[in-house]
Structures are given as structure tokens and as C-alpha cells.
Length: 262
Ligand code: CIR
Image 1: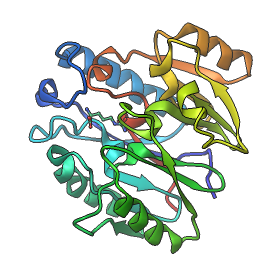
Image 2 (image 1 turned 180 degrees about the vertical axis):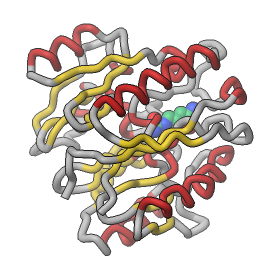
Image 3 (image 1 turned 90 degrees about the vertical axis):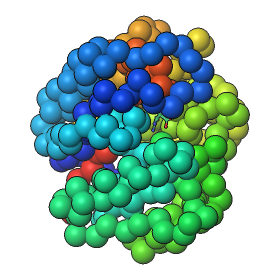
Image 4 (image 1 turned 30 degrees about the horizontal axis):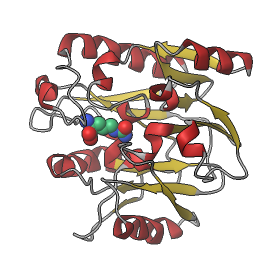
């Protein structure tokens, strides 16, 4: 079962090579200095909830390695190391595995050379694991994940990622056991039937990628209408600058792995 209490998070410092990070559209070169400042604010927000944050050193050989979420799925019972679908990111997963092994008794791996799957496509709720097929995650990867986590009695459901959207979770976040923050374009696919959906305000789609971490909803700065909706619903909101990661299609979830190892 999914718990909303996290004892741990893993982050990785942005590297100077971040300027060469992957991006769908070039909206400018990210500033390492500003990204580092935002990253420190993000870590402070995680720590303020009482969690332990493992802060890994930068990996210069992997420009996108600050986006640690894509390397693994962390469940209470164990972790599954992914096989990222972006060729430049495949090696990041092996660099994460030892850190998971230090914290977990059980670490499994996506192994089939035909399997591709990134953590940004995986949303774990109280009752199921939703995985969006995307340019980074294929059917073989989803099937292999389903086989691995069946060991711990998790059900995997394949869902749709809107065209042109990097990851499934680019467009949604879990806020509590029954509530999902989602863009209208994703919710329209019907994949959240049975959940309560809070729609992101029109024009504020980039803030759909937030995280619920212990008592806080950590969201990117600059999306006041969605923030006010969340505040009005009683969520405690913490806003973090995200201008530099956004240039590389990154949001709040991609910057950490969040878990409570049993
Ligand atoms: C990439 O294209 O892989 C990175 N520039 C961004 C990854 C963002 N990851 C995520 O949202 N889970």
C-alpha cells in the first residue's frame, strides 16, 4: 500500500553539463547557478517535512542526471531500477542502483534489452501503479515492470500519455489517496476514473508536475491560480523556482526519488 509518509528522498546535484541536457524545444540554456539555487530550495523543502535527504554528487557524464526520478521506482517493499528510453540516460540507472541497495533489502532490475521505462511515466496510487506509454516507455518495459512488482502484489495499469508530452507525470500528480492534480488534456483520456481530479488552471499546465511529500505539496513557482485552488482545498503548498529545469522539461517530481524502505 502507498503511504504518504516518506522517510527518505534521494537527489543528485546538477552538473555543469546540464547545459547539454535533453529538451523537446530549445527555450534557452539553463543557468547552472540558478538551477543549483532552486535545487537547494527544493532539498530544504523536503528536509523541512522531517525526511532524510541523500544528496548524491553530480555526474558530469550524464547531463540529465539531476532528474533522478527516471532511474528507479521506489516502493515500500523494494526498488526497481529502470531502463531509461533516452540513450544518453540509460547509464544513469546503474549509477543509482548502489545507493538504493544501501537503503533497501530488495532491489530488482528491468533487464530485458527490449524494455524501456522511465520513472517519470509511473504514478503509484494507493491501489495501483499507472504507467504511461511514451516516447521513453514501451509496452515491453511496462510488462516487465508488471512482472517484477507482482512479487509484492502491485497491479500495473497501462495508460496514455498525451502526444508531445514527455512523461505521463509531466501532466499529473498524486495529492492524496483519492486525489490527482491533472491537466485537462490528460484527464480527458478517462484514465483517472474513480479518482477525484483537481484540474490545473488553463494555461498553467507545467505545474501539473508537483509532489505530495509528507505534509507538503511542493509545486513550481509562477502558477498562482492552481496554487490558490490547492490552498483553498486545504493543502499546504510550498513553491520552488523551476525556471531552469523547465528549460529541460523537468518539474518537481523528477528531482527526487521519495520512499520509506521497510
Ligand atoms: C529528459 O528529457 O530526460 C530530461 N531533460 C528531463 C527529465 C524529466 N523527468 C521527469 O519529469 N521525470
